[in-house]
Amino acid sequence: MATKRARPTIRDVAIQAGVSMTTVSDVVNSKGRVDPATRERVLTAVSQVGWRPRRSARALRSGRTGVFAMCLPVGHVGVGEWLVNAEYDMALVAACAAATVDSDRQLLVAPRPTDVRDLARLDVDGVIIADPREGDQALTVLNNAGVPAVTIDRDIQRTDGWWVETDNAGSTVQVLDHLAAQGAERIALVTADAPWAWFEDTSAAYARWCAEHGVKSQVRLIDVERPRATAAAGVRSLLRLKNPPDAIFAIPYGTPLGALDAIVESGRSVPGDILLAGGMDGQILQGSSPAITAVDLRPVEMARAAVDLLARRVSGEKAAGPVVIETALRVRESTTRR
Image 1: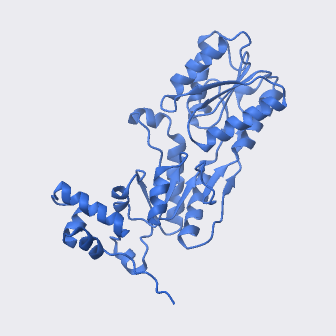
Image 2 (image 1 turned 90 degrees about the vertical axis):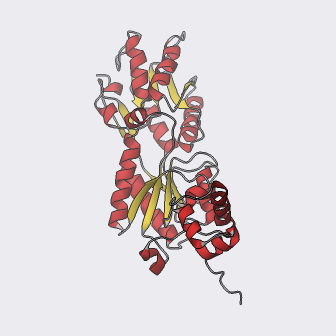
Image 3 (image 1 turned 90 degrees about the horizontal axis):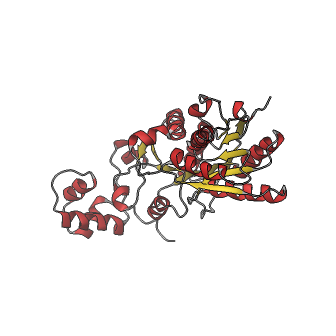
């Protein structure tokens, strides 16, 4: 009978790299002054040996740290811009933190691991990746290292079932049916050309709905790094059409406000001339004038489900997902014609 392969140790890394165990420790903990060439050699050895540092006493006793990590999408905008558009992400973090505490664990909010160097500093039992891109590199790094991971929304290429998602197609149809019931005949979609399941599912559902109802599709794409400004530019171009839309469904967070900017600038009103709905609810939409109808993606429920799913994967269960969270349409003044 084959014997179980022993877990790689720091000694194995030191032997592979030809250095002391103290040097290996200094490299993975970013301590001391280590020659760059030696540091590179140690990190290469970490990858070759497949060692995952376990620094806590709890981990030494149980083989687990009691810590989950949550990794958010990385953007290129400044902190101020991120905070304006990060209400959903902050709700995810708060709910994940509460759920991990409830399960007697801790939550680490960390950058997405892009290589073995990042992974050597990520000493956790499992990782939650929010909004994975298609073929997400972080998932590849984690899977190759055997680190359990689940995602909030899915990597388009993934098929293993370890993710939590909303019914993106169903929520899209719900919004479009609502706008049509309010008298809209030309509904435009403002979305993004980005490799995320949310955008892909929504665009596909919109195209099907338009075909089924004999409606000409009108789509404008925005830059996810500058949602409000680029949404305003896209809606301006829509409003210059011979038959401009009488309703707009703006998906990414911040885009409904950009759409509203362009509509008001054109001398039109919401909801009098144009109905307006958003794909992601939040306080800035609830507090705008008029208050904007939007899809509640229920981030608290998403986060709690992700923590529960990750706990199951860490414990060795077979795939228990995907877990689908029902959304809710929050109807407000922007789509209500009295």
